[in-house]
Image (cartoon, rainbow, N blue to C red; front, side):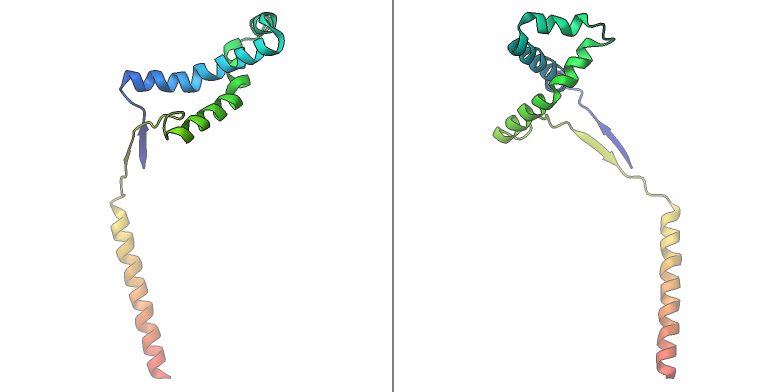
Length: 120
């Protein structure tokens, strides 16, 4: 089974990026500013972290998830954008042969059971 997700629509891509990347970072920055002012926000970038934006994204993700769920409660797909998914199923060609063999085996066992029941 192959699945392909995503959208070629730039607006959908922008909205997805906003919800999954920018919202968590923004919420983490706001929370840091609320707790300790601008110095706490600057601290995220001066602590020597290899990727301060990723740190902020992880820090803000729980709150962002809650916000997205609340938006989805208002209108499904608003907070967690619904992305189109194309699914294709490739059936192995030998599956039919295997099914026929299994059905023949069942038929033979039923015939043997029937003959045994008639013989008793």
